[in-house]
Length: 398
Image (cartoon, rainbow, N blue to C red; front, side, top):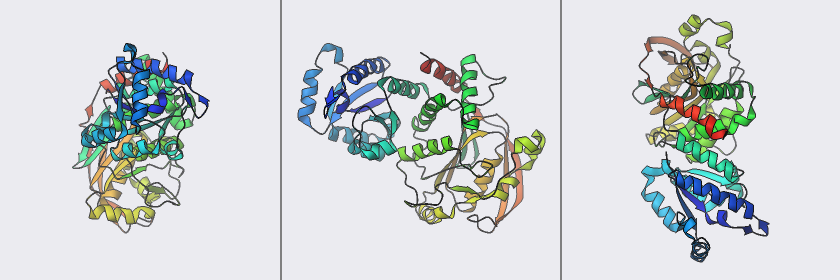
């Protein structure tokens, strides 16, 4: 998906506060030319009309005729009048004013760390350290257009997987296989840290290249079997929450995740056969997990507004037992819309099991009884998503 990039005018400066930025500026101009050649639009903005006028004169050479210059007020007016295009907008800046516009329009906000940046932007924006890193990020955004699988479990409950996790036999190319192996090493064992940015960029692309997620109000992730939180998945989730402009219920929380695992859970793939895992259902999840009570007040407010829309993240999905357990917990407290997102899917039928829940799901003492079950197999698959993973290999190995 091609992007409209709103870049703060500081990026074109060769010096700021005595800091020599000429080399970065020149590298950025080379990157900008390549981004334009690939179909992206670059608009440089400032609140100062005199600085914009000076910049136009400095870059009046025909080589730079693709550069556009707008006032910040013009940028704000444009993005607010075209919120339906927010998945096309990218802000490149280190100022809070630009950050607020990005948040209001639910646009991606990138901080180029080679220019001065205010503290809030460094905290909430996605950082890039060089123009070359920025180029790879935007290329990844342009590259991602498809999710590998999708299934509607019931009305307003959807399961999406970004990639096909079955690299052993089903990878279409060596490039796809290589990327999937490294991603699994990163997520499951914390290895191959140099693949972190690649996975982050691909994931953020999937989350921002569509408006499907724009009405989500709460974000959560599946805790690990040992009750811990996967740090990488937590950072991914937090970054998406920042981009969507959503706050936690409180500034200080004992746990900032919507779901709490209060005691360790058996690792199903280690102690159960494939058939037993298939039949197990959500029992182990119900025995070990509940909704974080620190979210209860905010959930009640959202319910009154008919905005109790939730997204839950996990790294991989097999039979969907964990997602299914959380579906039952969230429906029990009146969730309006639920989206489950996994980075990878093993392409197994989804085990939809409905439970009657007795007691409060905000503590560990509730009881769940199975009332109905069915196997769902009608996934929508997008082969192009596999090609996009393979393309990541080329983007980051040029």
